[in-house]
Image 1 (tube, rainbow, N blue to C red):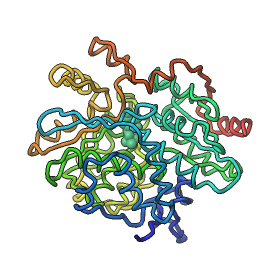
Image 2 (cartoon, helix red, strand yellow; image 1 turned 90 degrees about the horizontal axis):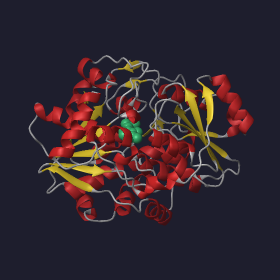
Image 3 (tube, rainbow, N blue to C red; image 1 turned 30 degrees about the vertical axis):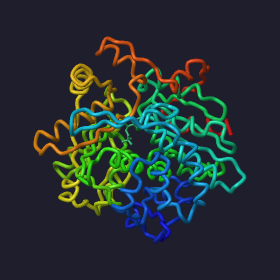
Length: 452
Ligand SMILES: *Cc1c(COP(=O)(O)O)cnc(C)c1O
């Protein structure tokens, strides 16, 4: 197996050639020195034979098959197997919506959202690959679910200190309780601003040379350590749902596009994917781009019921541009157009309103006897939109969080009480702690300095 190195999405913009780095370097740096995102230089492939052999195997076996292809030269095989068995010990329920449409629930992890898949893996990789004896400071901007998933994944891991930044008024009550109650080496910071502001503060700190001694790393969805494990559940869903080797459509509720990027990589590795539906809420910058070829971020981002997707300038879009031959900077400036025709062949994107989201939740509950939350509903509605103009191909929708994370919305529209899974009940007994800060880098910086 050829070793996989990682280069930056900005590599052709930089005045000097920067050599590609190993997985370990990409993992701890988070962002490339030229502020681009790390991309695998080559992708390994998944053969039909491998897909056949892995059918009906436990999730951790599928994860090993996929991730060992990336990490063969970086982590001992037995160690990787051990880690995967330890962190992926929960189920991925698959439910039929109709006879050609399925829903896979990625909400059975320790914090009840799909973010657990990436966060758990990334934390374990960092803990195993860390050689430096100094403590590492992990910075996370979160629109809700990332923070708790990352916090929980690093809780009590020696040598790591984690700061979770979230927009004060834009996370649900349960999300906030989760974020502020992890405790120990995990600190929650409520910013008087939007998610994009939190993300901007993190990016400023990461590129601030005067803070180098804090040994920062970022655990946002840009971290390659979170992207790679998100390839796995598409493979798992496919082998457990496809009958022969028919191509399938995947509909993915999307915000920063890290989740759907896993599907794009799986497709490029050889998974039979017919179309990737990037389902977004009223933050419609990407469907507009696919239509018109010009990109305008939504700023400030719009507040929608699917709050983890209130993103006006998705950070992983730069990676999509790279895959399709373009260059996009983190500010949202196009330096080179991607191949738009190709993009449209493989990707479909549609913006779903809050009204359509609520209608879908109600309809799925009454007609299909399926309990879904707002993010999952965006994905299901987007698939319906896609099918209006396309043949009804077999499809898999992704439910990204547990409905009990959104009791306010669901109880209001469905008039029933939503039971919490054990993963969420554990938070009820924990006490909370949070620091409030203005949306101001100087203030954030002095907080970090005071806390070191
Ligand atoms: C983060 C999140 C999303 C969006 O995923 P991206 O990888 O940012 O596109 C969707 N749904 C839920 C519940 C989330 O937490």
